[in-house]
Length: 159
Ligand SMILES: C[S@@+](CC[C@H](N)C(=O)[O-])C[C@H]1O[C@@H](n2cnc3c(N)ncnc32)[C@H](O)[C@@H]1O
View 1 (tube, rainbow, N blue to C red):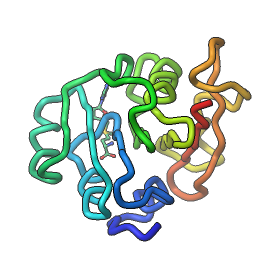
View 2 (tube, rainbow, N blue to C red; view 1 turned 180 degrees about the vertical axis):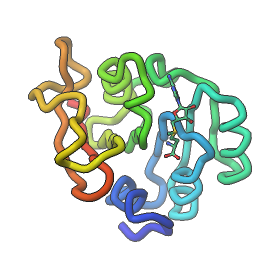
View 3 (tube, rainbow, N blue to C red; view 1 turned 180 degrees about the horizontal axis):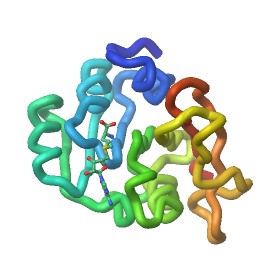
View 4 (spheres, protein in one colour; view 1 turned 30 degrees about the vertical axis):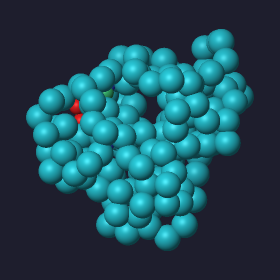
């Protein structure tokens, strides 16, 4: 996919999501990723617990579906999105595994969940490398590291 993403990180996070793809950005903050994704033609939804961040996201990505919601309790139906992203959010959550399971639930089977955390691939440890789906019961989701560089990133297969 060719996106209008302003940062290499966002480009990697949005890779492969074409126009019309349904994106949910969890912990969207001021909406920078949403703005890039909307410019690339994606249908964008963002959630955050911080209303002021969502007000900024509204300015950055007018027309985005923005909701105050907790990453641990996503208010969406199963399989509602093609791409679910958590950019620099997992490290702020009391229960990142629960959040990843929720992300997997709302992501279509053919879609992807992508999460990034601060650090380098050698210094940052994703929440798990165990071979489990975030949708399945058990303690750990399956993560696949996808992005070398200043931010450690992982992609999770919803099923
Ligand atoms: C470091 S910021 C990253 C913002 C954005 N993803 C970006 O890359 O610019 C972390 C964001 O996670 C949000 N956040 C923290 N806890 C959350 C939760 N339980 N559910 C949803 N969002 C949360 C914060 O309000 C903040 O906007």
